[in-house]
Length: 485
Image (cartoon, rainbow, N blue to C red; front, side):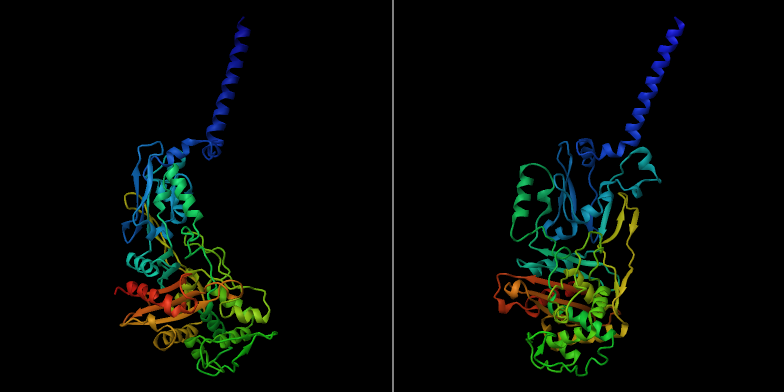
């Protein structure tokens, strides 16, 4: 009898061990996969059980939370949502997260291990800390000037501090209120359908996610390439360029909007925006030289993050000579985000050194302890320092006596470059108006801001759309805000 009891006990012990082993397998080894299983609603309930941390502009909160009293308790709110939507993105209980709300989600939800009081605390206790805050580099007056300047037009503005890479403004219009997407239910799904179905694409972040042909603003890149390669050794010397200029290997004649471009100097070509001179210089520099120069400014970089991903700006690496001529004046397949063109202006303003652009200054725990800080770092040397000095003077001449006079600011040195980029097959669409610029207050040691503005205004008469007429006044307002005027 005792023998059978022993066997039964051994069997029960074996079953108990198997039960404990299975429990350990589920609770330890399969915990992550079960937590992430879409059918596990506990994870979602836990995510919204505590208030989300905030996104800050100039120390002030531009986000908040609302206690709904529902199972998904805390819902995201936004202050001046349309103004800051291209910066914050949205945090939706239905559609997930975008932009900073996505890139810094672990900080904002309190799941980042750096928020724990001691290392590995969250992993050992499976605890969740209170959501931390994300302080941006955005300056409210600069952001507001860009947003108000664009008004009802479709377009975008990017403004960067040249010496640090801090992004001071990031605006895309038309915009939307991300608070409409925060919760759940018919109102949220209805808002989603309306916004995603709109022809004006209000949820498209045109500043970092949309590329445009940069038109004549790209001539700054071509000028830098020609100077660095020694194709031009004196910016005031004749360039031996005919007007009209026939694209290499074709019978197609490239026109000029400006006069006096025949055999014009590089300085004059930038000042009045001669297509013929810049196309010719691009061809003389060669595809390899142009591609290398464009890459130093950030073109063809698919890995740029600010911390959200930025669309890749393009300069083709395989072209015929006629295509290279067009690419050298910002046409053919050349395309750029507004942030990319702000980087071009920033590199010129900063003596040729291009700083890595960033949107997050620091992250902090709920009590204010700094968790991480973004230090300025060099992205690339875009051009020689001597080349930057010459381009600075050429861009100043554009504003003082050329096509960008409407960007001038009393008490400051302003450099700029206009651009009117073709749009559509055979240039059938409404052109895009561009302006890139930088500004330095008189007496200051370094420029305060570099700006890129693009306006795609389908309501305007085609002949009225110019970078100097449409985009430059917006850039001027943004630069004045950055200068503290």
